[in-house]
Image 1 (cartoon, each protein chain N blue to C red):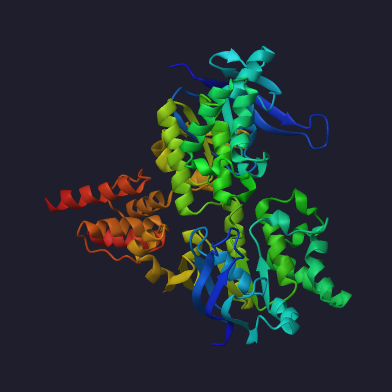
Image 2: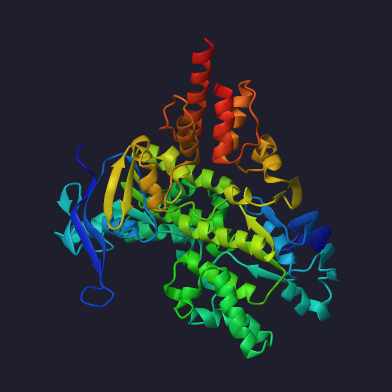
Length: 281
Length: 287
């Protein structure tokens, strides 16, 4: 598999607010994101996960170490446009990302800026709106849409640039349960059916559980990296850094502490029910 | 016990006489009792925000009444104003409503409007700040220097400082990480206990309401389809799914277990309940 994003011993500090305090946000992060994968980055507020995301398309540049996007060093200013075309970003608040008064015009904004010919823009916009299941709303006013719908329009706006990778920074944090489900389904479809690499920054463990790979961050470092099932079974380590585990894992862990032999990696409802069933037989 | 706040046959219609006319609440009878910790669940557009805005007189009923301690809050302008102080409402994302130069001034805005003297205002600001875990050195800072989570605490302190008898919070933990969620829920619980206040928690998270509240009220399509102890409400699993809400994960797991033929009570909704249900089942079968 080809690596699309690579961070090598990445360090980052924001400029000092008060004298003598340089808050270190990223403290030696090394990470490779494979093309076509679906990676979730989980961590609590202030762990550095959003800062890491902003390094993935050169919104922030490293204080130390290097980030490569498709082999390009993100500090290479001449290649900035190539970097931004390769990796698109979606942010938390859908209201801050919508610029036009009509849905399809909003989605057309980025390709217009990239100088894409009009015929192709039309095609890309239709295609992007279909990909997020918002084609029926193409002539609607964005401000009358629900949060989840707006966020899907924002995702369509990124897809219209045809990036190979999409980085989403807590895209569901401000959404209700239905909006969250729709956005997650959209993200998964993008990854599976279109082969777009997805990096999902989140603190919802149920969302993280749906990724192929889960990276956990705490205090600017990567503290766990692996398949969600394997990572979530490290209950104590996760709790130590202020993260919770899904209720299924928590229940199995409690039972194990009481001395019962149950697996910790039964993450879904069905797997957990199956594990309990076996135990009770 | 008589309700502290209640609505009778409350109907609210937005934009009457325009093409956008929309009935958000349709003949709702709602009651919250003194000292109760109540949860309101409902999907976006269900009418739950319209309902809570009636409880502190931000919205006036199209028809029906809102009673605070048994009296119609719109019967006398003095009472309407009093209700706004006695029923504190913390909106969703309240951190966007901070406006003062310092945290202290922001928190003191409510008590000052109540016409309290300086000494009492000071006591209340400090007590409210303490409740939400803000330190003294935060008080002289600009609220805009604080982190998102801290700003939210300031906003909640601003309402708590009015020492309302009923405290309503609309999605107070939205967007927070697990640690932030725990600490805000802890603050609310402490306020509830210290003041024997009525708490009304509006939430999308079934896991969150499940372990916090004594009673749940479900709002859907401008009506209250069911209410009761969490255990009872979560028995309406299919209807809750249809309302876009669902039930806690462990409730789903236990329903599956039962479907697999295990003789177990599926009405669990917290981790502790699930654990003791499984353990007692194991002990019963071993012993």
